[in-house]
Image 1 (cartoon, helix red, strand yellow):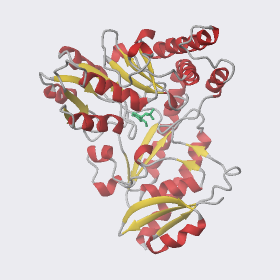
Image 2 (cartoon, protein in one colour; image 1 turned 60 degrees about the vertical axis):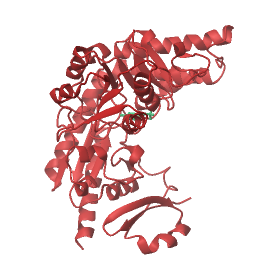
Image 3 (spheres, protein in one colour; image 1 turned 45 degrees about the vertical axis):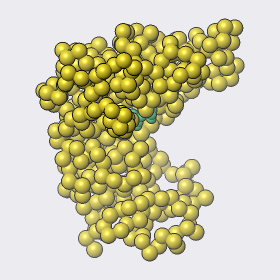
Image 4 (cartoon, protein in one colour; image 1 turned 90 degrees about the vertical axis):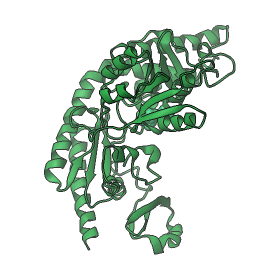
Length: 428
Ligand code: PLP
């Protein structure tokens, strides 16, 4: 079946995007001023390059291999006392050790959840709403993932208060400004380790010191860093830390909340008391085993792989900034993830570029995947001070283990072609 990727534009704004079947197009025709034809029927034969690894990563073959027995003959419930249960429990506990080792934690400090969103929810709600706790003020940054920002808004509606720290034009939180916001009733500081859109890495070590000096918990959403760069909970000074399996070549629907020994958030799920009472629900054994193997693999290859991706990233960055006029880099030039590039292009819509590159078989994104259907200016780009019209020309390219120099060269050519084409069209 062929699909058409179309965007609907009112005035000069893209208001909607959809994948349509050819018959549906007539309804859209009056409003469509830009139309890009895409076909899913030739996908098997066309060159396809995935450069959206901050949205998700493929499951590594080693991870899949480790998981398969737990979807087959090792199907036991990890809580059962018989041999089937014990076999599953062994898989869970081995995975716990592997994840702990990747982040410098003790296995008892690792709690399996359904992913980054649940870990973030548990960390904030579990501390701020804990019965008997009077301190209900949260400090966070204005560029967090919705899994933090929406939770803060939810908590505010329930009587908590939240301070949203501004960031500078590179997306950095200023630790001294954060220190000024700590109050007598501050319960927790939550600042992400690296941003999912612009890749900026925060000065977590300094923030951790402020948290310790003020006897306040520090949570960090490390969904975008664990498995990509070194993460050590003691070095960061984190009391709670969120991980998502599908961002490090593990499966979707599995994650971890690291909770420092002695810290005890209230669990969100009540039931059979799994995960030492913090997270009830029969364990997703295959997912947990997969995440464990992904963590083990990351600790083996992370350092050389980060260097390799950094070289590809810097090559592409130099090319784009040198060769394409009226474009800029969003995020910090050096304190950024080795895999992340986020460019702004004047006089071009990021969505147009995305669809054009998709036609060429290249998958990238504009802003974060979760908000890409909303087509609103990204809250992260607004927070670093870009005017709304500049935000709409942004493109996020996030590299992964499979990307090669050949992919980068293919992208360079396609990008130059796309930017020229759309600028020519907008000048007409
Ligand atoms: N936090 C960050 C920084 C993310 O990038 C994401 C996903 O994109 C999440 C949290 C949510 O993680 P999950 O998809 O596992 O719920």
